[in-house]
Length: 122
Image (tube, rainbow, N blue to C red; front, side, top):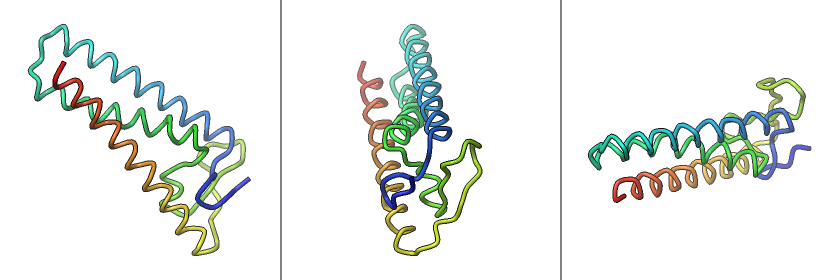
């Protein structure tokens, strides 16, 4: 059930976000291990920001039942078909959704930065 700024995706979309989180986590772990054993210089390890942030974004969206992309576009989806959306009609609801989307993106970026900085110093 759509709740402005709280929930804008159903089971199919949640599953897709969770899958993206796991894929991103796998890429982050594989890259980190590769960088470590290949003795990659510290500045290059900062690139772990990208997969770590993408992984965090997927997991956060799945846990929060909220798609940041949908929130920014003013749409939602609770149907069984991934990607098929309905429009959020009320401007006040779209504003709440955009605020939640920005929170998710900010948290994802923060997690990506933390992971990259840890990889830099390890």
